[in-house]
Image (cartoon, rainbow, N blue to C red; front, side, top):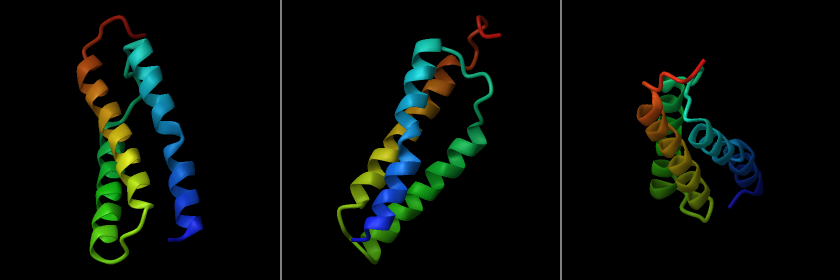
Length: 87
């Protein structure tokens, strides 16, 4: 296990729970990009596949946790995309 990879995953993933909370609280997705979310999801899935095939260690749980929050944020995007109360 690489401490640097774990650090990268922690730093990259730190913002996702905040983004999910803000979207849920505001019920507004103005300025969010589906394309970016799908790009990030693809990256996390590739990281998980790499861990499974070549380098299985505990960092895979950080990939899975980050993937969960990005997918949750994308689900909230679809839930609130037609909210007319957004500015």
